[in-house]
Image (cartoon, rainbow, N blue to C red; front, side, top):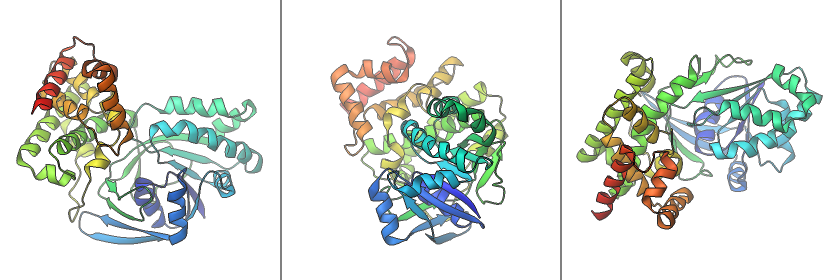
Length: 380
C-alpha cells in the first residue's frame, strides 16, 4: 500500500486531497497540522464528512481510517520517512517552516529508506515558488544528503481548480465541488494516474499564471465587492444584477489582457478556466474567498498583475482598478491580514499603501485609478 502524507489538514487538505485519496484504491493517508485543535477534532471523532458536488450528482462521503498528528508527535516524522507522496496544502507563508521541519524527517529517511522515491506536491495559488522552495531544502539538509535528495525526490507545483469550504479549518463537515482535476507538474516519480481528480500536465507555470489571473482575479473581485455590499456569500453577489455585471466586466478585461500577453488560443483558455456547473448550489463564503487581501492585492498577483498586464498592452483596466479599491476597503475583523491592511492605510495613508503593495509608482495611471475609486467608494 502506498502512503500519502498531507501537510495541512484544513478545508482543502481534508475536503479535496484527503477525500480524493480515501476513494482511491491502495492508499494510506496521514495528516499533519500545526493546529492542535484541528488534529484533536479529527482524532476524537475518527472521521469527517464531505459533501461532494459533481456535475450530475451530489455525493456524501465519510472519510475514516486516516492517521493525524501535530509536528510534536512522533508519528509525524515516521510519516515523512515512509511517505510516497507529500502534499503541502498550506499557505505560501507557512512553507518555509514546513520545509525546515520536513528536512528533519528526510535526513532520517536517507538513512532508513535511501532507495525509496518521494514526490512532493505543493498546492497553492501562488506561482513561481518552486525554485525558492528547492533552495530551502538544500539550505536545511546536510550537504552529504544533497545528491540523494536530487536523485530520489521530486518537487512539483500544481493548479487548484476546486472550491472547498467549511466553517473553520477544524470543521469535520466540508463541502466541495468536483468538476475539474488538480493539474500537477510533470514528470513524477510516483504513479498517480489511477487517482481520480489528479492529472499531470506540461507548461504548468504558464497555465498557473493564467489561471490565477482569469479565475482567481474575478473571484477575489466578487468577494471584495460582496463584502462592501454587506453580503456573506459569493452566491449572493452572483445573484445581484449590478454585482454580476461588474464581475463580468472584470473577467472581460482580464481575459483580453491574458490573450494578448500569453501564447494561448481562446479555446485553450476556455478549457483551463471554464468550470462546468456542479449539481446543487454549494454556498461559498466571502470570508474564505477574500481571505488575506494583502496577498490578493500584491504586485504580480491576481488583481495587480492583471492590471499591469492590461496597462502594458494598452487595454482597459478600469473594472480591475475598481475591484482593487474594494479590496483596499476590505476590513473584515476576523482576518488578520485585513486588519494589517487597514492599519497600514491608517498609519501610512492609502496612497503609500497602494504603492507598497501593488508595485505601481505614485504617479502611475493604475495607482491614480485605484485611488480615485477608493476615495469615491469611501464617500458612498
